[in-house]
Length: 183
Picture 1: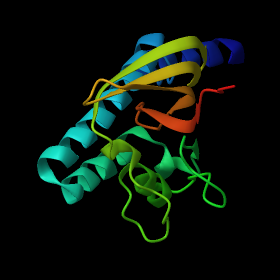
Picture 2: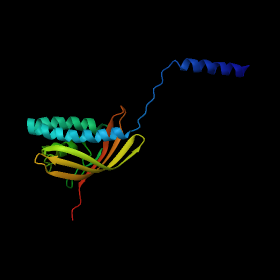
Picture 3: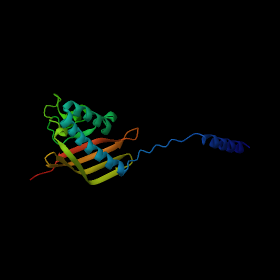
């Protein structure tokens, strides 16, 4: 008798629990999201450069701040950012202030920064050597080609790691960039 009562209780519980909507959270990263994030980063760099040319440093700085807040994972913790053209003791930019200075310069705390994003970039292209996706993160490695207003191209080796935040937005948690080795 007790077993029948327990079974009946579970049956009622199953019926009543099905009335509640389930929330499924899937933080898995897709290749399309990674490629979109990379292309978005490139477009943002060109947009910052164009904004600087057309509207000046303050407008470019405001846009760069928005890009950093939207693309990088600084609000989640330390971002492992090693920009291309930095020198010791400020090689690594683990804070949003350091990253902003690298992109637009003008911060007395980072006197070597001239503003990488202010170099009249007109195009930016990604050439991935590989994309590795596992669960809620993805890593990429390859070349990024920048073209300036005179048609000159600069290529860098770039590694990114993307993670999803609590809202499901893909963010850059690691960004390493270096110039190609020249003999």
